[in-house]
Length: 177
Image (cartoon, rainbow, N blue to C red; front, side, top):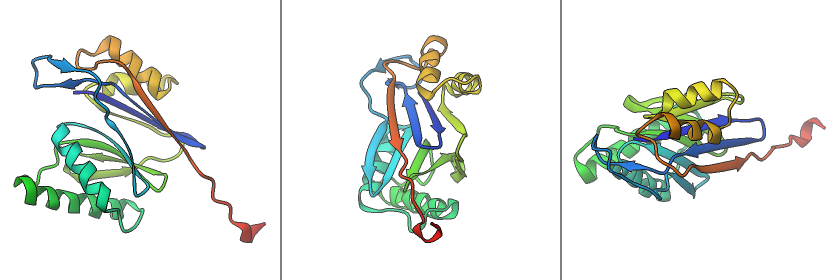
């Protein structure tokens, strides 16, 4: 159980997450979990759900990247990951939810391979604290502030808050100057 919050600004993408790992519904928790993973092939992602699936997705992403940066390209990439995961674990089911950024374009990947573009100006939340975080962001809070609010309101969210910002490169079309 966790919370992830993402906002796509004009010049950057911000992601915040809590630090807890929870084991079942027993409330046992361990801090210092890093859920925001660093770039592989211009891929960045954060996940919530079983850590085993997130770890396998990290390994998969180290040696592969999507063929095309569209919703359908990401759908194929993630479907191929699930086939690869099935070969290793005999489990094809997607159990985690993800924020996935490829070549500076953010996507949200929900269970059952629901994939959505996250457009400029939009925000998204995932995990056990998604409703509290979504409300905070609707009221104008940053991803970090939204996760901090979840620390107060949701027993399945644990500090400290981790934040990450991807500065977006502007591509200038010199042909039109």
